[in-house]
Length: 614
Image 1 (cartoon, helix red, strand yellow):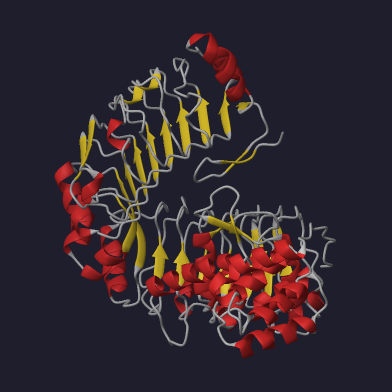
Image 2 (tube, one colour):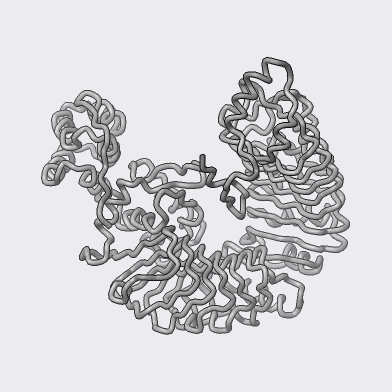
């Protein structure tokens, strides 16, 4: 890929020095033994802000004059371009692993956010985060991955995401151009990437000779429905996720394939050659249409991560399928069609085999009978510690006491779904329970009350996403207003909800960014208070809430609001308090309103709108 022309505003010498000094640290830049060579380095950056930031941050740990002199000589030998400065920043990264992590970011579509969890999982699969150790736990590797991300952000080689600064990053265009000079096939380097991600391809047009030398191929986020993979003896990574792919033909042996992502495709069957992929460490089949796992899965003895989440029609797992996978660290069956207790003897056999896999420390499963729930919470401490994703569905006889014991035992839960438990009329979260839970789904439950201990005790301290659907006995969500970390609230088809919070305090939902209200026929107001500050609110979705006539926004509230999405008829019937609000506030909110018929692109998991073109 040829570097795109870049016109950037250049700073004058005084501005350049001030920016560089801030990034490198005044104490270092003003050292009399370093100052002169530091000014020379600033001159090599030619007033380009990104160059000054990247080089400045690369020099923050360098304290010896000889190190600065070496840097000046290197920059002097380069042309005075931004790419040269970025290449220097790349070379100054801590080690080859971190440099590989940066290059990996170019496999994602241009101008798109890269989800942090997905990125770190890829890096773990590649082995970039193993360090000098032969084996490292996924917990240690995950922490190392987030440390790498912070370092790359600090170096100016990554930027915070557009849509969620805490969960996403993006690769600046200039850095992408620099990376392409290091990874293009034919560049002569060890990294040979083919990145055709998010360019609306309908068929793969990569020549066979390019496949033959490529180390990593990304075709994610396209419109490809059929792929034939030619001989690829050096291929390490193949990313085909987010395509309408229904057939994948891999008949040739791919000896080095380490990462394979087939998630969010229409695949019903796995390639017959799967069992020959002995180097595979990462296999993502989430949100596919596979109905069964092949016995050949047991041949993947180097597999560390197997994601089968949200495979809604997966129902058959052969006995002993996981037994040979003794290096497995992550197995996620959460929200799949496979439930423990559908065939109890087979499930019992699989649970016993998982207990023998010592590295397993991330586990997701679905349970639909009390017997199996009791087996989990009174059985293997290893599975209790590793269970992070759990769906409990159609558990006849389950009460809040059963759940209280579950919450006490499964201390590392990150995502929990409760579905159609007919005797569950009250949900209670006591002191210190569900401390690490980030997402909670409540669906089709006869709940009349939800009681949560004060957040000062740690209960639901880290809850970020709350999804409630078809819980008709609930009248409000007052219990949720003080959750300190709640960012997304999705409320669907709850016929009893009349208002969100009965509190008269304005400072509720302090970190809430997205509120999604859908099919709430009795909802009249969001709060008893005429105003809510909602200091973090960015997006409001309102659909089929005909009695919601008042929005609790004032001139000083919701200053970060980006848009309101709803029906045009609903918007026109809103009531406003007084002429001043009618004229001033309504004009402000009017500019943020997007009618329901606007062209939108919604993320399937969070329902957060990603594109709202003007």
